[in-house]
Length: 550
Image (cartoon, rainbow, N blue to C red):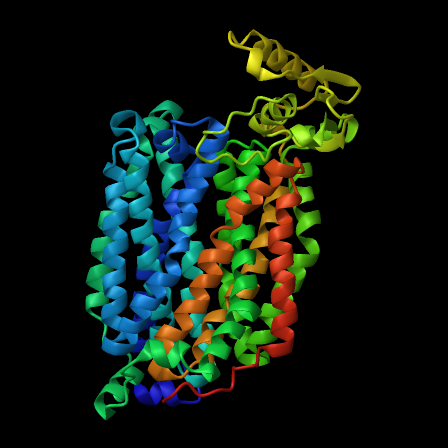
């Protein structure tokens, strides 16, 4: 096997190489499936575990819990990366999948907020943290394991199979969720049926452990172990020496940060945008995303193989640049094709919140403790709850806020004197009537959705994902020396994907809630992708012709 890894890459893939790729990829697919179940079911989980706050705050809080799993991924990368460089690749990512599978299974059994109160979200967040730690050690191990088995000239195409696993895991989670939705009525699924996909993870865990137990250790790691050249302090070598730390920082800013925001925008934020902003039915949104993912998956392999010929850097940089330049028109197209009534209402009767800016609070309230009582806060809260896009206009100092829906003005009120709720009821009724008259839909009309065009837009978003993600595993492996590769690779990858990418939905939705513009959240991925393009073009070296042998 060591000879194969050192070879020229000519000839067909050997049986051993196929087994390595299949076993590593399948286990990683299952681990991503476990991790992304939560994101796919965020709307239901917000009701089940965060019902102690209002629906808008509950959903944002659910996104924060989702992001908590990403927050700890770099710490998992440090812990398991060190372990992988000290004791081996195989046993490290065997441990990570057990942690992930057990934590996911327990989520399926966890009582909700109505049953055990605040203990429910507390335990849920704890399980998300365990999942994040496990995932922090999984990806690096799988990518390195495959790369260290691969022929030199096919490293990009071989590791691209690992790159398909995140998307396939998301696709598998959507498929299982959709199957469960179709097998029962909506009330049953939202009450208890959502637990089934989590409980199924115990079966996937058993399969994954069985497969990985049959694998041999990486030939390059075995060689270092036999020669006694393993690193005795991989953390110190990785981050305590400037020559390697510099590469870690370049890999983070010039590669993984941009790759991460493109990945999460093209898959997760697109799903959230469809369901939470455009009010597309959850089942329909999952189908649309699922079809786009299915069409896009082969391009991970295409761009991975292409990177073996023309280089990793030009493909990744092109993906970041295209994303930064086209996200705004692509998401505008999603609105036009998925909810044309909303797009038409925006054009004909734009909604404007007119208020004294000094009375307006920041609308991000994840724990539900703030009391939005000023007329400005009441008006903006009402629009945020309905998912209505709006612009802001400054009123005279001390003036009562109002909402302009086209030519109709709905005057707000100060809620401090509304003990019986009559003023709020009257305001809500007037606002609902005004929005209905202006053509603002309560939800997207399934008959009006241009399905082929929505899928096409989503496919373009996924195509950007395949460009930035397909070649990146090979490039990260090639950037770092074998003795500290697991530790050095894992940290920039998981800071990029865990922090820059994982917090994207929460940050983007908070920006939208504050501004009223449904597209304003896109500035976050656009700016990050643009920074990565500039830094990457200047500082990131091409690596496709580098040897990865110790």
